[in-house]
Length: 79
Image (cartoon, rainbow, N blue to C red; front, top):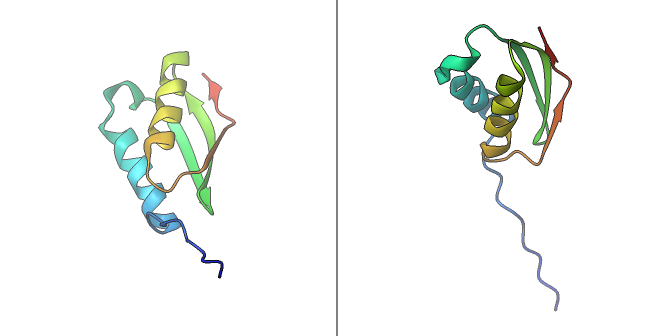
């Protein structure tokens, strides 16, 4: 017969958001940034502003490196 295999889920939505927020808070380049993080079904939506182009890329990499994230959409602007 056919067997199914469920992929592991690495945490609840609140866990994913918390992990991203904690990693952002630890990064000294992001202290002046105002970043809003929304998570739904492993999809991360980033909004707000960052101080520099480099910071924008840093936040996106942090989101992608978080277990459970399957998609990242970045709508942030550079202040």
